[in-house]
Length: 216
Image 1 (spheres, rainbow, N blue to C red):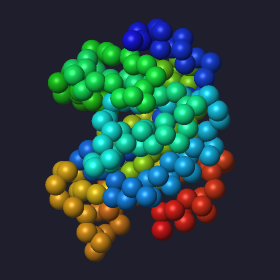
Image 2 (tube, rainbow, N blue to C red):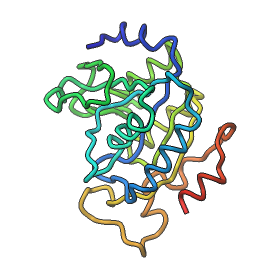
Image 3 (cartoon, rainbow, N blue to C red):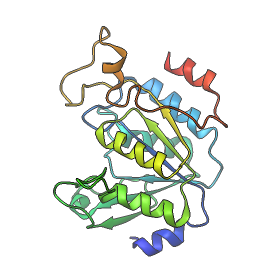
Image 4 (tube, one colour):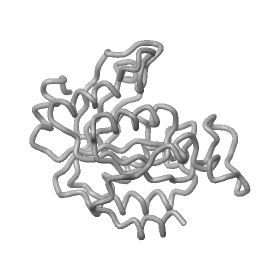
């Protein structure tokens, strides 16, 4: 198990990446496209890099951002995945794809999982990755759809000038884990709250022609 200090020491000489996006109330609508997107991302990740992971459980039957991390480890065993999660979630266990974990109790009932608090400051898991970026730097963050916390984190990504790539992948549910997306729904409904609110700027190392082909 890691402390914050040992996590910093472990990561300080590594290339650090993050993956955020659809949680269990949205999920991903098409696993095949999700796999293609993960492969697309990994083509540009150097060997022996690492990803920060925030404890979303991996379940192929309910594919959300947690399952995306399982795919990362499956496709790139050389990549280390470090988990940052609140103490309250210890009974969920630690997925087999995780290299090590940093548990913390720096959260409140109103801001348990992450995002920003009522004062607009990063809290819980979000606060931890912001602090890590300020200490040692995060190289790139990949945003796959996402909900309210994802959108809040996007504004922090912009604030701290972190390189990012937004991929508007379609979700399975309309943010409640119950109401399924229909083929007749608008593009905004299919993508969710991040649609047309996140704009890609850093497009230096990614073939968007290939990405658009995957998403079409």
